[in-house]
Image (cartoon, rainbow, N blue to C red):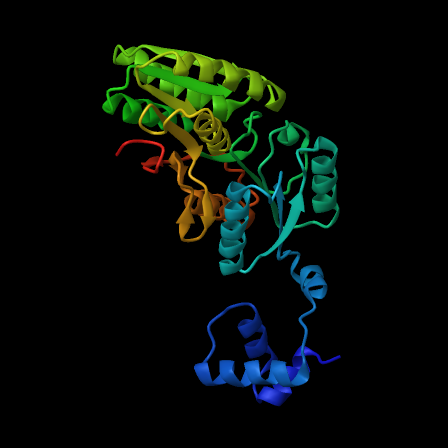
Length: 326
């Protein structure tokens, strides 16, 4: 197996120059070209384990995410990896499936391998059981106050949704969302919607859904209510997923969307980098969430002696689609 010395000899440069090149430091363009050619010719593979033992600086960051099936998580994973890569880190992706025991095992693995840091998007109380000195930044939820948090401005998103529906002069406004009162982000979306309506004298209704099993009953009741009413409705659904289900079920029941019912979701999913969902939605800036989280983690990894705890809020925007009259 080729060594760094072999690469230096082949490229006719010093070992220090090769080391600088591999660590992303600036070297002469001609030297960089020769080193790159030597690496390819010799099939040189960098020994990151040896580098870690020597410098005590790991190049790996663990990213714990509930799923990669959702467009939100897929897009977030893409941007996290991109910004980690730009800073010279390698991402270790751990999919938890919202399983607390899996999340704990990933944290244990990270501690045992002495990784550089952890990024976590967890809906359990995972951070309350993390006691190591490994830097950790949480996305969306962090209830202990011990770790930095990066989150969308869910409260402002609820206000924006209410404002957009009220601008369309609809007779009836409804919020449909989770009955899980432990969900900080869902509660914030609902609170923003309620506060805007109350502060502007707008009448509204709240409809809570306990679980997926309860969806069908709630939606059937809503369909009958709307079909028997000739006035127009405006609905803020707490997620794009629920907004899509509502749109599909209303269309099956021959309720015109957006002529009779206008719907706004929350997330602003992208089906592809250039193709958003067709529904109107409060769009989370997923790239900004990832970039901010990675930069905050990098800052904490670079200064482990000073534990900085930040609360970083990312603005949201309204993106008009086919489920509102625009």
